Amino acid sequence: MAIKTLEQFNDQFTAFLRENPGMEQILDDGRQMLAELISNPGWLQPTLSRLVLDDAFLQSQWQSIDPYDIQLYNSPEKLYSVRAFVWEPDETYPVHDHGAWGLVGAYINRVAEKKFARLDDGSDIHHAELKPVAEAQLAPGQMTYVLPQNNGIHQMAALDNRTAVTIHVYGKPVRKGFINYFNLHNQTVQRMYPPSVNKRVYAIRTLGSIAEPWASDVLQQARQRSFPDAIKNEIEYALDKIKTLG
Ligand SMILES: [Fe+2]
Image (cartoon, rainbow, N blue to C red; front, top):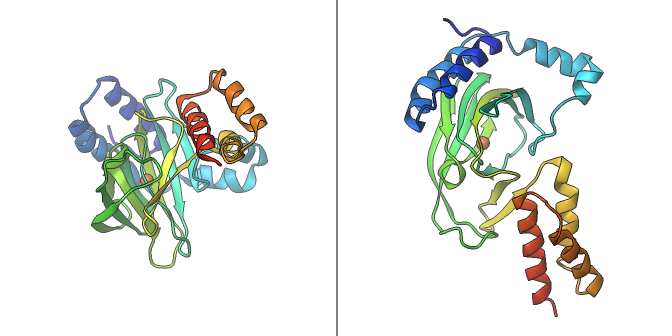
């Protein structure tokens, strides 16, 4: 059956992933399904209309790590999600990695994609050496993909001085809770969290920079709580950092 709407895509993509396809099949058959969806104009219109005109719809939006990431569908079985990313012509977007595989298609206007390879071994969480390995321009209907973590580091940009939209399908994450932003200039890495937790992370990092007993007390208490792994790691990094303070 043809894929002309997001609903039709979701019916077919859910059935496809329930069969447990391998990565190669996802990049082949799955990619063709998304390519078919993005070759049809119009289906994003209701979402764009409601974001502008419907306050309740706007307020109900999922709070993603990147503010320009609009969630269009989240599989109830947690098999995948569909998002629209909005790229503005005058903005420079971060080089980043992903917690999951992702199929990406240009939908509205053209985008550029740069892919990077990671040269260091990743043992220092604050440091990364990257090398550009590929650069492409994608017209509406054209596709690219990313693999999890160091195998899918890339950067996107709008072309032609127009706001552009790409449609992304992400699989089940192998790493949850944050993505890495890479600073090529300083060879640094920053973990980015969703708005629902990022103030907690900033507070943890602040405590890790205060050489007072009360600061490590708070972190020790936090250690006893059942936070997700990514937050637990931040607490451990902060406690380690306190030890280095004079
Ligand atoms: Fe990405």
